[in-house]
Image (cartoon, rainbow, N blue to C red; front, side, top):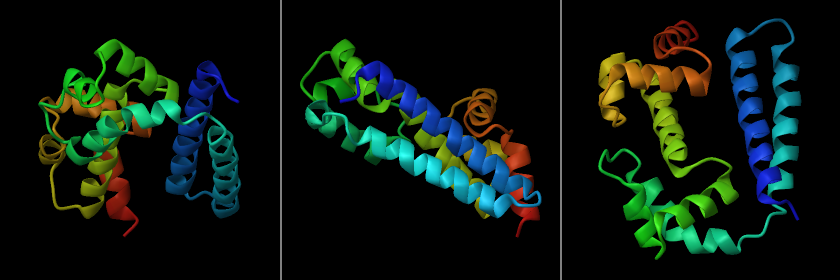
Length: 166
């Protein structure tokens, strides 16, 4: 079995691999396709390691996870509300969440918002400010900082690269 410290490290390695495959794909340098396939296999191997973790804690927080996936764009979604959905205090909920996902619930919610922002930016129909607003970010600067932290590039550059690859 994988302990919670190892679990967090696995999740971080997977996140790094996803950033690497994205950067490799977007750069489209010679040999990028086999490089992406290699990285994809590394991601799958890491994910298989994650499946060996116990799921009893996941069952405890499942109502909260469902709520996150339904309402991650809601600016009023709070950790206290999520914890109460699972019948526990915030500190215990946070601990179980980190144990399972390797990151705190707030960071998980931000990651969902950033993924949604990527989809909106790929459409090319919204400005960066509109995307930030649609994704529940009250501040364009916070959105841009979070986007760059998660994706490795600014939302403006991401939108330009999506536009040029069409």
